[in-house]
Length: 280
Image (cartoon, rainbow, N blue to C red):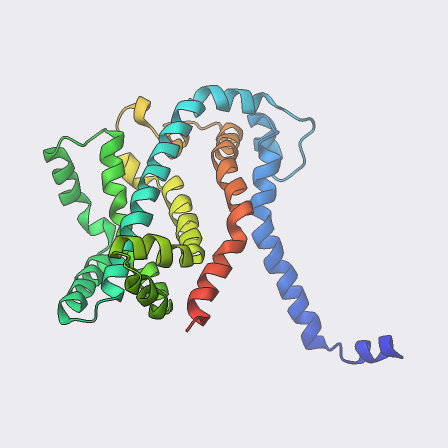
């Protein structure tokens, strides 16, 4: 009887919605399926049967991709840029947000407005003056130059932290101040540990954005010794012909560390955002 009642509520509208959802699911899954089967094919097999399963596991693509993209050097360049800028962004973004959130004067409101105006300017409109400035300070084709440039993400971190700090009870800081703690000690021992959810969320956003960044390294890094993983993948595109199975394999090698990182950290994204929205 229970099964009969469930079938009674199954209408044509529900059936159509399920068909639409299945079609959308197929559209989303198809690129991943195409990527996985392509890395085990030869260029000839991929051209003859793009969506078919490989006749045999052709593993030479991994060997050729590893040798072609100078993976180890590019990996450590990308790792250095990503985590060096991450430390600066987390540290300065949180400290500046704390200073503005705990001060209610008109001056600090103007500071926040200044950051907001800068945050609203698209990066594409500032590429030419940025290049001129980097050239003036001899930071072109330098890893530390790109690190300095990438710390501009502090503005995004500032707004992420500023909204979250407003939800932290100020009474906790007052107790530490009464006990004689200074501003830095209050921030690092009382406030910053409570910002763990948004810190993890900001870490995930920054790592994924910097690791996948192509435009900035393409503009400011010119030699292969300083190349990032994305630049190495771009160099695999030929002028007249491209080895697409090799390109797909290169893409898998580049994205594998980021996918592993995201699998272990994804649950913190929702926790960080929802905690910041619900608190208070």
